[in-house]
Image (cartoon, rainbow, N blue to C red; front, side, top):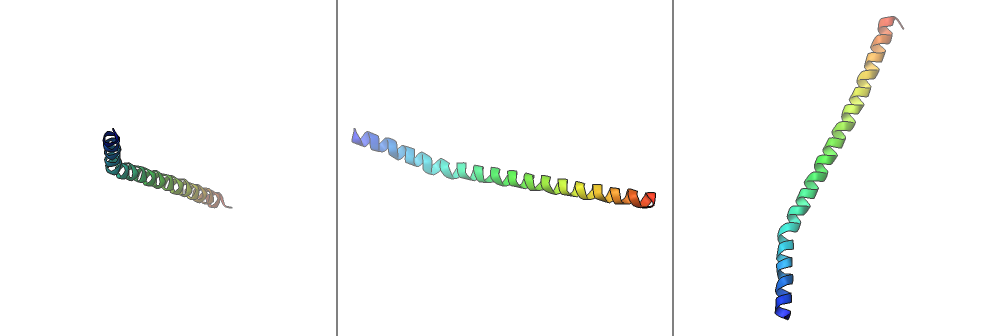
Amino acid sequence: MLKTVRSVFERIGLWLDKWIPRIADFLLITVLIVLFLMSLAVFIIFFQFLYTVYLGVWWLMKCGF
């Protein structure tokens, strides 16, 4: 009985040794992709703001202000 329980835990241990690094890598890659997309969105919003300011200044200069 004890040997059977021990073999079950050994199998679980082997399964965890195999799959936990893969799961951790997948989660790390997912987090890095999400962070990259968020930073890309921030830069896009920032440059849209700068372009809007540029167009506003251009329009004011065109109107003679």
